[in-house]
Length: 130
Image 1 (cartoon, one colour):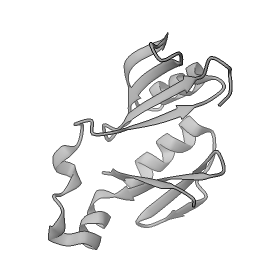
Image 2 (cartoon, helix red, strand yellow; image 1 turned 90 degrees about the vertical axis):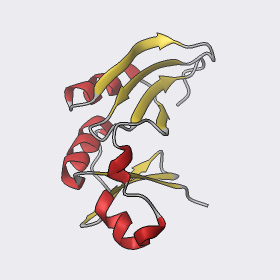
Image 3 (cartoon, one colour; image 1 turned 60 degrees about the horizontal axis):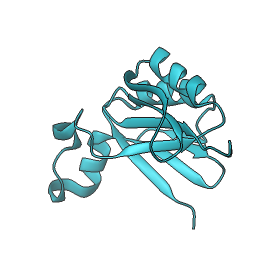
Image 4 (cartoon, one colour; image 1 turned 135 degrees about the vertical axis):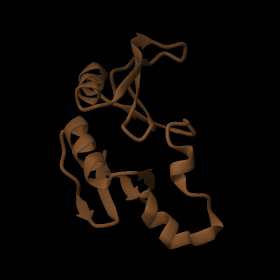
């Protein structure tokens, strides 16, 4: 099994530039209607334009733009240097929600919101293992 998590985005190219800058890695796939980033080798983070998912599923769903900016999930990435990732996210256009701090569950984590309103968390574990 290889998990794929797909975020619906308003502007695919803006989101590609944002995530390329934050992750310091180019997409493994970047075609009209879908962009993919390999995360940790075993997971794919996808970016799909909002209009593309509406074309695919039609009236079975509400248009994702209706929920833009309303947090409904988060991308939580355990990395070696969460502060560096968080700083790149802010420099690339994310809005800081919570600075890097030790959290109740033992991780040190920082939270931001990407240009589409998706919550991003960059964290390190107490063992330092990403």
